[in-house]
Length: 224
Image (cartoon, rainbow, N blue to C red; front, side, top):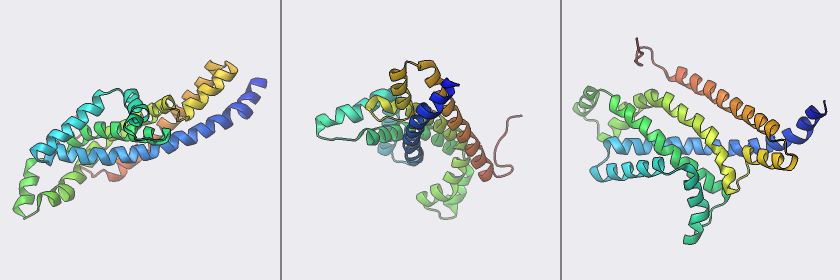
């Protein structure tokens, strides 16, 4: 009973404050990452040779560098160049750029899956390249890429816990602080894990709902 009282009155209020910070990290990072991924994915398929090379280099760097290294560069490295980011800003920038690189892979694959005949028909109707991409190809590609992009959002929820490494004290950071003060590491981090499980489950339900809302009967290809 005393343990439950401790969790209710001392632990949960602190973790809820950390959860709010985590949500403030996750939402803008997820939206910015998706926008970056769409932009880079389009460049990798329909851009000029130069823009394709630049986009591929971006993806190679941000998929190749560990996320924790990226966080350290944005927060601890940029001050040597005279650029100072707050812990929150550095975390959002790192999460967005890293997530965008992975999103671009899903978008690129979906774009390449669109049948060539549709592109030829659009050109025959006088569509410009930009209008063809944004009116015909991209809407179909996003539907096909949505499950993969949703998976990246789930990953983002979990690796947002790295933000506390650059002193952005979110859910995991708050949990670490309480555990260090009370030495109840097992109990605290089980609660933290349950909260992350709740977030990822909720996100999965929402993403599945979005998939169902944009699904066109007969458009998706299901394995037999």
